[in-house]
Length: 194
Figure 1 (cartoon, rainbow, N blue to C red):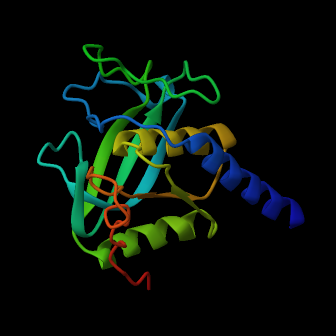
Figure 2: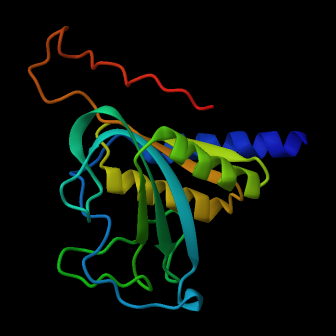
């Protein structure tokens, strides 16, 4: 039992350390044309549950954008890991490259939940199916939504974590002149997880 707690703490510490603080603009997470692939041609397929303060994007391939939402939003993203994956790395496609899941991390499906109870029901079912284990990952400052999803997938895959991965993706304060008043971002909306 002690080893399980130590292992869980190490996984959480690793997640926090590798998340870093640097990021880039949010990119498309769903490709427009994905190369067809069989399950035997990928190294892993992971479901990532998401709670975010980000606004839903008008671009369905981006899912959530760089704007703050007035309410929490919920989703699940299935991400495949390529067989060429190297531990600690995230193999990402460059602009103009194919959406090939045998070469790159790729989101294969996005399910949006329009209410917290629907999300909680799906999340609880997954937690129950995985033995009651949950890893909550909160990304670093200035991190794009896509980067956070792929980083959590990489951590879950590389560690062999058997529980349910949950990403809390937050949006930092808008870019304003830095005075003591603008440094404080409003808190995320309160919610119940019953």
